Image (cartoon, rainbow, N blue to C red):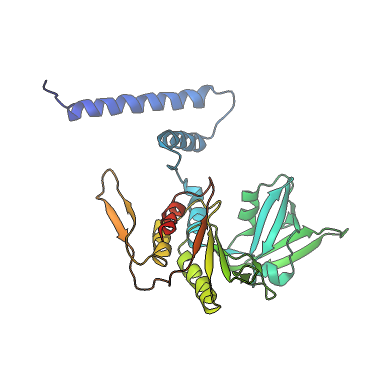
Length: 295
């Protein structure tokens, strides 16, 4: 049996028919849907749907979200230095980061953000609040908080600074409001919780482990629960800190040659017992670090 591949002309005709179908559907929705639709939102939704059909890991980053994505990678932004959560319709401060405008102003964990720049936060989402709180370095921002057991609100006026948010956290804060990476008990067991893999994560881990080794580290727990991943290069660098040799990871694409990374002995920490915590939300670059379980 002789199989004749489709000609370039037939491929072009198929592409034209597919694009024609998409354009006609787009026009029908825009013209006849029960309410007006935003053309850009409609297009971005179509792209998201197309990528969602491929697998759960393929995603589209729209232009308005590029800055936020870069902030996640770089972990640097203009802001006041607080970690927020959204519970019961309220914006609650989880903790102020040490040596930041919020910390120096006196904002505490548990404070409820009631107003930002004099505007109520009722109905404001977490993403919207973060967008309002972040801004150019040196630009002031006013935040009004409600504090438990205090009848009146407090207003804090702060000047945004460059915030370098850590991706590595310890078990608790010490008396100097710095992360304590050593668990309580007679055995000297270190604990590092990694929120995601950013450009500075390896540097943060190395600094924390160096301090633990100086204190007689006997074992280490790395917590990757709820870690969605991040930079592959960062995960490779972190794995290399604990592996003397062997393959760390390899990648292969449809149109790119296979590439692999091997561990190097130089700079490797002396071996000590390790445990890695994961759950169903540990993904992507987190899985690269799971190679450490073979130590």
